[in-house]
Image 1: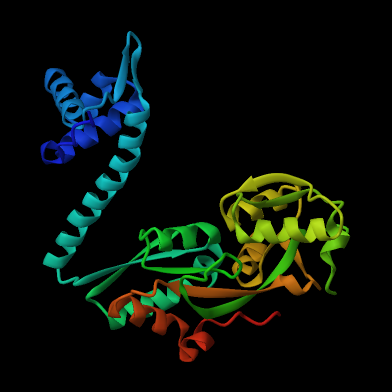
Image 2: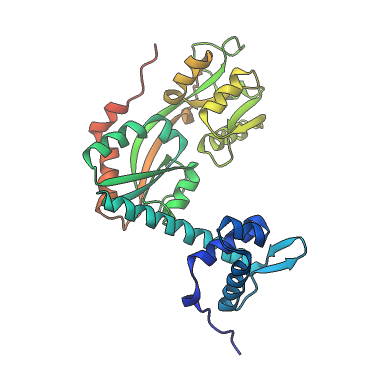
Length: 312
């Protein structure tokens, strides 16, 4: 006999939030407290949720709760439901204040640190009824967010597979070597990346387009990148380099303020891959508001306003 269908009509978001909290804390008592529910009511809600599903979500032990395979699946999708509900509540509140449309922009660190802020500020002035929500991700995850519908528009460094998306060139940037001011490699002339591979390196977290380019360039030279530390931001990279822990490669426009503030040196790279193309992508079914934002960001008239400052 096939299993009974799930009774989705008996779900409510309080119970979903409670189940997620149980998985995160491993304790019904802590989850009930986090959700402002008395313990007896919380226990009843979990039992009713399991009854509606026809599956056990948690194994009960003397030291707490452990999610079953069904529980892990429920929590994974429950988090998505809760995030969507929170977004819905926020969007409805914005509508009451005159915001007619939310557009979700997922962008790489390079795009955010170098180009997007002044463009988005101008767009907000021109389109007060549109709110652009920005999430920062590495370039590969920008594409994942687009495909999964968690983002409406993506800005990223060219490289990930985008064959099912509509892609437009956005900006170009230049990668430069940053190092302590008195480092032996400091200088004004361009240097080949292969000449730096004896050094200890500071880079961004795994998945970043910049780190992938460094690894590929090292492998092409038959060498291995001596990666000492990985951090999440350009500022953190600068602090590590300033402390003498290693050298790094960063986009020139983004790192010039860091170089000045931390009294670092920089040097051009002679490798072709140090000149990168940034792109904007949307899904083929994008609506008019998404297309309008894409066209604004990529318009030739905007490029001069966010051009890289000249080297002094």
